[in-house]
Length: 257
Image 1: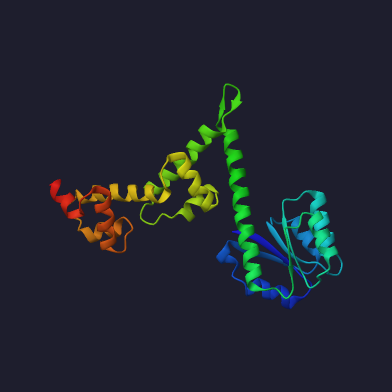
Image 2 (image 1 turned 30 degrees about the vertical axis):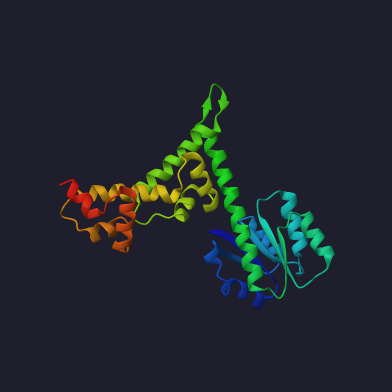
């Protein structure tokens, strides 16, 4: 979960944003609230925050002043402005300090959802790139040169395959993406590029091989094996098994016993 600080001098707005928007559903957690820019600045010096959703016009320290301070200090915090002011000048100042977006009050649910969904994708990509760079530095020096592609990419693919083999019953692209700090869409393309196989096809391969292994044990019934490899419907399991092996689970068992 990415951590958000909501900064607004109006309690009702601040509280409403904190409690009545489904932050968790799109990968965020409201970590803290602040009444003005000065208070937000004090919190930033103590706590890790990924994003600030901030009003512009506040007493003590405005959102613009807070954004300038963050920009000058080069802190890695993304800012989304929230304001009832439509003045173009404010928007221009916001952009000059690296503010990601500008949402006008009263806030529309769809606009908030779209803005933060896009931001989530951006943060995921940034984290995956950071993960790539950090790992490539630790285990890929060959003849005095950094070898990013072979060592690191092999390590990621190995991690993915190992996890699928252990958790084949309920593995998903999303939890694999979280494991290796990649955006799911990017991970899907990456896996296909490096292995020549779709991630979903690889999961099916692991499931079917495990199913075949279980079929060698006559103590297991087909519907039990179906559930053990993650299929809630025995019919779907049988259909997938037959497509993969060219015969039904029963035929496969009979041919091996």
